[in-house]
Length: 185
Image (cartoon, rainbow, N blue to C red; front, side, top):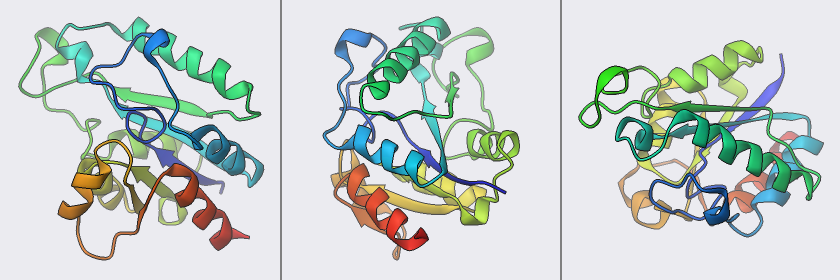
């Protein structure tokens, strides 16, 4: 089985901007492209998992999310980095209308996106990592049975105070990845 790292998008890979969907507003957190490249070079599957309730709320549509991910792919190529897959949850249990307003198993802290990625890439979740800046990311990792890591970027500085004890916390994605690579080499 392959090894994998699931990474939250907003606040972990890119600068947190509420309801980000426009490519011109996208900005990497310093070191994030290098971190993804290091994971690629160490033969980890890199899978982005992101809640996108802006779809349910009607702020943007699924096509806009896909366009932003294509933009990310193009920008990552400039650093010699790539993402193997993007999974997003368009739902919200309280906001929105139609098919998007519902409780689902994909919205973090649920583990549906992580389990889907593990299945599609034949990953052993017990040897995978999940890196994010929110308690919901940590809980999704724990629910899926993979190793959670919190970063202090995005909402992480505040959220790191409300996660279970013993969860590793690093300054940013690059620092977390360097630790992972060190553990695996």
